[in-house]
Each structure stands twice: as structure tokens, then as C-alpha cells.
Length: 120
Image (cartoon, rainbow, N blue to C red; front, side, top):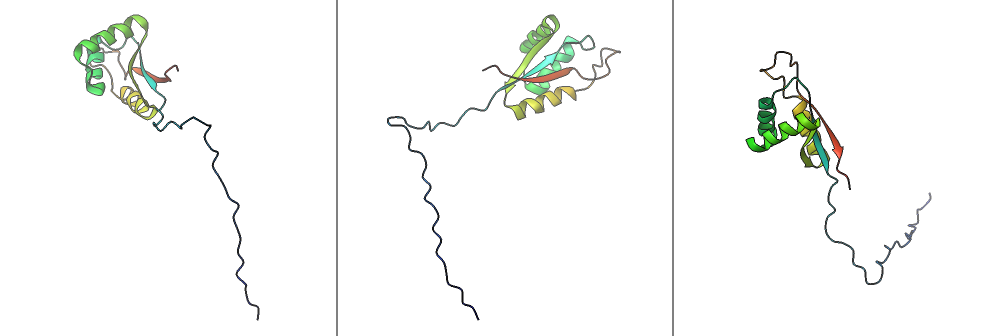
């Protein structure tokens, strides 16, 4: 019969590096990277559609919706929201799922939207 002796295994001591002298670690949480939700222009949706969509999905007032509708029409794109990645993805997907413009017969679906990282 063998007996087992309890062996004591010492773990090596692990120490965290000491902060540089006179430098305190920043206790504030780091801000998440921000992303733009970009609405792209097309000829298959009216200003009214854009204003209603922006109001329903983003809560933008009518005046802001009109300004954004004009910008997307003249510039080809407009940033409708800047937020975290997960929220930007949700809002982009909601734009893509909003449906066709009932006032334009050739409108077969939603407007295009994308997300892009906010420049640092």
C-alpha cells in the first residue's frame, strides 16, 4: 500500500507593474468608439418619406428631417446619427427595413444606409 504525501507547491509570486512615479492611472472609463449612421440618396423616395422615417426611427423633429432630406438629396448622403457600433448597426438595419415609399410607384424597397467609423 502506498501512502500519498501531501506535497506543497508554491506558486510563483506575480506582481503587477508599479505605476510610474508621480503618474496615477486614469480611473475614468474609456469611451467606446463612435460610428456614423449614413443615409444614402436615391430617386425612389420622397422628402416626406425621409422626414417620416427619421421621425419614427430617430425621433428627429420635422425641421431636422427636412434639413437632412435636403442634404441627402444635394450631397448624396447625410449622417443621421453618431453612436456606438451596436446601436449604429441596429439603426442602419431599421432604415433598411423601413419599406418602400408609397408615394412613388417605382419605389420597391427601403433607402440605403451604412455605418462608418467616426474619424478620431
